Amino acid sequence: DAGVTQSPTHLIKTRGQQVTLRCSPKSGHDTVSWYQQALGQGPQFIFQYYEEEERQRGNFPDRFSGHQFPNYSSELNVNALLLGDSALYLCASSSRRGTAFSYEQYFGPGTRLTVT
Amino acid sequence: KNEVEQSPQNLTAQEGEFITINCSYSVGISALHWLQQHPGGGIVSLFMLSSGKKKHGRLIATINIQEKHSSLHITASHPRDSAVYICAVSTLYGNKLVFGAGTILRVKS
Image (cartoon, rainbow over all chains, first blue to last red; front, top):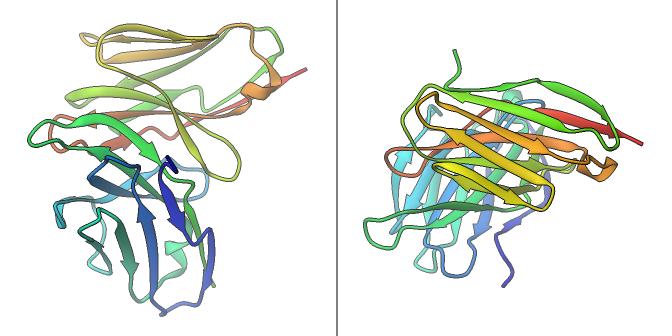
């Protein structure tokens, strides 16, 4: 079991560009959540995907969008990058199993995005 | 005020000391998580609990639902315990995690 994987590991972009980050959940998990962690701070919830739909969203602008594929993997897209978007982006997977959540979440290693 | 507050923010201990990190929350929760994050970013789940106490090796986590408070204890601390310890809560709906700011722990030999 490979656990949660994320790609790329590191990324450097310029202001105004667009970026796509990818996440593959742990085997057997169907729910993917994305978090942003700025340097020296705790992670902040961006959004959560289940059954290929965005189910919950944190306080992030529309520049942040996502997608979930039939194999449960997910992408996070950020448009019109700002310097303040520089952060570690974490993906976490869990299992919903119908209407009941398994609250344990497994985290990927993260993607460190630097915007210059 | 943040929904999840941790204390202390920074903690330096000598090897062998007993360590306590505290977490208070102000929202309704379905579970509380203690997480460990090493330099480089990877997060490992240490405990998930909704009541009582859990123990794993030298780590003990407790939660008091009525007081909305949890503690993480490390017995016989070791330099390899040096990391950031993060308290997070699963909200009542949708399994969103709300994180504390983390406690930076350094254990000196």
